[in-house]
Image (cartoon, rainbow, N blue to C red):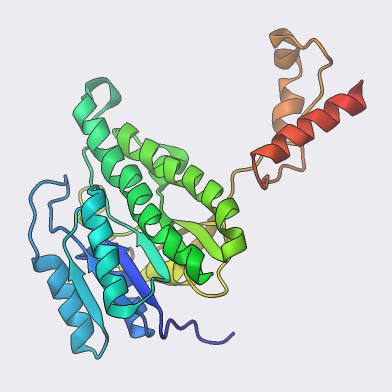
Length: 301
């Protein structure tokens, strides 16, 4: 297969001052992209700010011969994001790639989690993805091309103790991906999600000793680049970590028709059949499930 390149393309990477975002930004630039390095310079919990992190990565790209802009916009501030996007357009005239990577953690068991902790994490992981994607969407529609990457997590896909807020937000971006995949198809806007496992500021306290090298962000970034390439798939979730890559699918069993007047007892009696039927498959959209149920009911009657 030919080398995946980004020559002439413009990419925005949020949360790119360190960790995964930095790795993604550097790799995109090394393959020809002009990169907006966005990072407000805040702590892991989202507090504080500073321009040093974004500028350091942008300087690293420029020192290697690439083109980069440092930006410190808070991705939860729609006006600041709009200004960031306008700056990229004024400088380079297009935006081809958006990697929604910014995030914070405010872990707490569900029983002890306060509203502010829940809302802050949803704000940064879900609302920021909405804000940034909405800001570039009309540009990508007009140019007939776009690649958008959501950053999901195993915490959202499978759950993790103490991360009800984080898990809720990280699965929510998958739902956003699914709809944007449908709405963006006619404009060649492809939307995917990455579920990374990497040693970063956000995960260092959770990793066993000696795991950091194997779980370096650089071993995740190839999946990000694949998912924003010209020949990328769409509506795809890739799990990536330590150089291992997998595809995560949300699937549905074929279904079992229980007659025109089903009861909860009937479901219980035939639960083994309903839950373990062979032939589970992903559905292309919500209407596909409705159509399947309607067809089965019609055939059953």
